[in-house]
Image: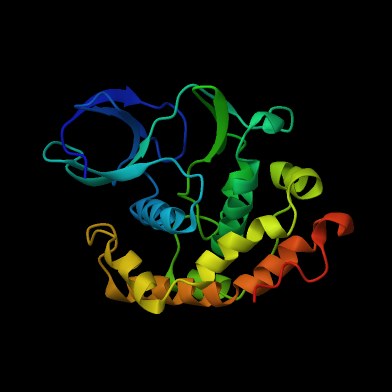
Length: 254
């Protein structure tokens, strides 16, 4: 948890109006506050994605909780490492990245949790220069479950859906860069999550963000259902890959 920080100002863009803070080691963070206009559910979504991203080995930036002890922003907030220097990922600079295949995991995650904002917002995939290489990072998971501010009823409705997102960069990835085998390791890791691990993920979400036990239980139930649907969802994604890259039944996880 980050506690000793200096406020540097507002990012200036984004519906959640994120802020920039710097810790005592000089590391800068993009921080989404509890007091954002969409409420604490977006912080729940961010923390859930952060934890799952670590378990699935997704290219999400490092993150942590940030605590402000006093003032109008007192409480726990979500902090994501500020990446620099970066460019927005597009069809022209995509080939420069050394981790293109990791986007298979991000794409699977986005289909499991309905993060349509990854492709609707062109600023949610970044190309970051790190020493002598360039790496893709997927940012902003506030709008999981289609709109961010989910309810028990909306989670229940979405749990069985298998709609596809084949827009913009995802269409290019499936057509030119990814094959079915690129998704396999991510699918296996998702399927290997035990019920207890999933419950533990939700238990780590601060009570001040998600105080209702029934909502926490609904989130657990949703993740378990989606875990068990991983094969089906992956099959539908892979059906969008040209036949010569798909491979016969290569999307089925044994």
